[in-house]
Length: 495
Image 1 (cartoon, helix red, strand yellow):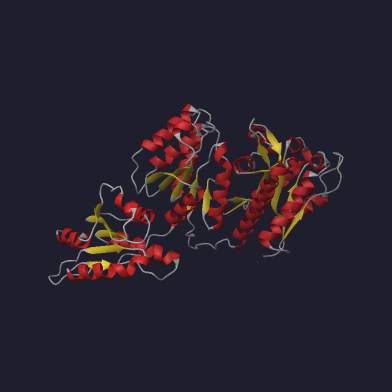
Image 2: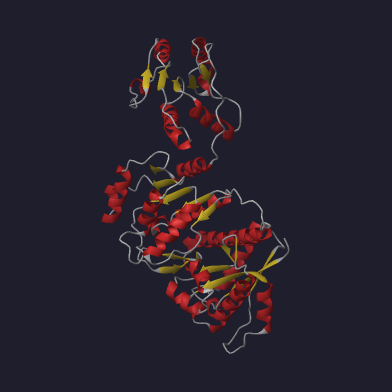
């Protein structure tokens, strides 16, 4: 990649010394951004340029600025009230935007060349008035910016540089901006030629959240993008309810999975709507026709009883009581790490088709039995496997060698293709057994189109308190004791 230039546009009043340590906000931001770009892109590939002359406000929009704007591929703007008061800053933004609008490349693969950095909270209407260029307003208003401030418990925006405890947030945002710059430049380099096939990049709709889930959403977005996903929505939402809903539907139509983080707060309500944006997005996703699958998630500590806002309590209670179709939607309470594992699982391509069933002597397909066992119990299951094979069943056990992904794909293929699931509970723990039963429940979401002929748990020694007090799921037969194997053989003969 040839050397690319980033134009850093700012009001010089935002770089005046301030605070107890006389820090310069823009100077420190530039240092953090340069360092993050070096880490993300490497040295010598991107140069950050800003005008460091101390302007008095009477200078003309000079040739040097024109030249640097021509050379720049990306425009990073530090938004503040000082910025919105500067006619010079407006000229920089308009000049850069106009150049790329005329070239038709202000967006590259849905990514804008204008990167908004908020030093302070800015009203969107004020920003639209500031841009003051009709063709450019939708581009600036619709893109998501990066907030380098935080909102305290009283709802007041605070400067991160004045709070030692927020240093990590400041550098994380700088890294996010560097990553956005890298993706835009990579997309420009890899722009497809005319007629090239569309990318198979997974598309995830990561719903906008209320303020209490915002940081978690940003962390999840980073992780999904690092895994090669395109994450929607990729801009600011319309403020009016009908336009908001239309934008959400358009994004959902592109996605294969929608993810909704449900916290304790209800969230803001679009103009003219009866419900918050969080609720609207969830309802629109659940009503979306086609193959879209929705994952609604809440941390264990957020319960309907513990939520103070009545409308949010009602929303959570509705999710808890909903009877979702398993292959279309699910409401999950878990840790964030478990959520990430679920997302990886839902985005994994469908498993390979299971092997064709074995035919019996009279030509009929043999009943396929998936004999699930932990590697520690594998040797002990061989007599059961041999006995079932002798009775004419086609028996498969999990492999014990292979990568994690290979073993997961094989397990899915077996659950899709078998007629009967038999889980052997020997030396392993109860949680493992329940996990295997849950996987069987999830099989319709992976493409299984018929019910199992039977699901069994065969309990074999050693005896444990958990085995004696095991709560039997309604559709599972549990067989215990010395005759468990014979009982299973008898039950399977009936199929």
